[in-house]
Length: 96
Image (spheres, one colour):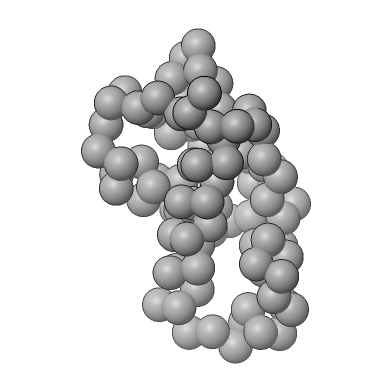
């Protein structure tokens, strides 16, 4: 199946990462204890979030929804968007 997109991949991943930063429990996705997560400096945490964004993007090619910590990401193929739910709000990331 795969996620279809027309924008620059790096721009999409950047937007997904920014939206995922607000999700509680990102450390669980990485099998990392909360103390370990908070011991990382901001740059290392950001790199982890970008890696999660990559993983999510490719996983959504097989599944339409993926749980991430207290939130989830959904691929809406009809509207060509990713919807990132952080538990309180939704961020729409356009794929085209």
